[in-house]
Amino acid sequence: MGDAEFDIQPFLEGLKMNLKSVPSGTIITRIKPSKSNWLAEESCITWRDNVVVQDLCLRLRNVECGEVEIELHWIDVPGCKLS
Image 1 (tube, rainbow, N blue to C red):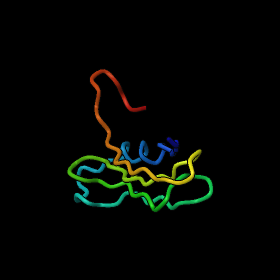
Image 2 (cartoon, rainbow, N blue to C red):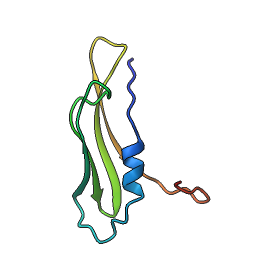
Image 3 (cartoon, helix red, strand yellow):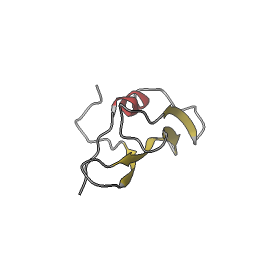
């Protein structure tokens, strides 16, 4: 089983934006694959159905080959604040 990592900072920056008047499906940010990240393809952070969503396809490391696809959503937890 391999592992991968990604930078969550662009996703958190998208959460801090005031997007209430933005149409659903608007792409906030595009992150291109590079040697400094494990993206297998471009990752888009999107405003979808009043939620910030990031789709990622990550190349696994420490294995011969493999990828994992992730769809990241923010879930509000009572008592916790985004700083």
